Image (cartoon, rainbow, N blue to C red; front, side):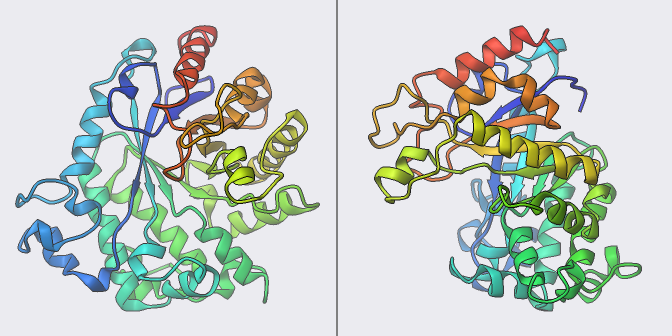
Length: 361
């Protein structure tokens, strides 16, 4: 991606992306249940936009669908605040299996993983993925595949062999044109097919699978995850992604009554050792994604909750780099959290300082 120092990205609208030299901006891509609308007709533009759902309909009612993706890329390319007039990189988080399958939260381990073995669903899913990749075309972009899903797959596989090959998926029947030959009909074949399609339809994009850190402090977790990711062919991608937390620590403590979500140096060090161990074995670097924006200057009210990850990560950027982390992406994972418009300008200020101190690369 042309960088030699730790990259910084964000999620948010408005003018935030113009206020600091962010390297990336990320955007979730999702959909309502595929069974609730005519997905093929929506892609083709033969169905009114108002009858469609998901990212393909995130624009005015025009014949060409998927314009949101193209416009997001164009907006990023127009920003050249980082060094050497490099345009900002659009980063797409493809979070589709759970919402598009029509499942409710809480059924993920059994339902979401089982959805991959539903040929009707998976056919539409691959069609949607292909359409996004075609909209990206030869443009530069980063593609982050399915937060949580691979964690659920790993949890389900743990009840049998521990390998993704234990989980059936209708890969070849659902996508014979791209992955009909040489791809297993299991979770590993699914992941391998997703990466392969990027190479075919969006050759200048980079792609990575998500690694869930739910038990990262447990002995052997890094080795277990590394083996699982290699079995998924994650090494055929370009990077790995993980999420230390999607919400501010004091929101968890005060609103949810859950303690232990905050970071100190020791907890950060444990987490970074885990990313280094997984990364070293798989042979791919990590992005830390959807990092909370809370900071010690907040007052623990709505959209102003305290967390310490912004301050800790920027003040230990050498340790971040040494843990094979190549990028930090900040964004709130829920509406009540501190975000880039309510954090008092701390993330923008830290990003500006980081840009100067890293030598402008």
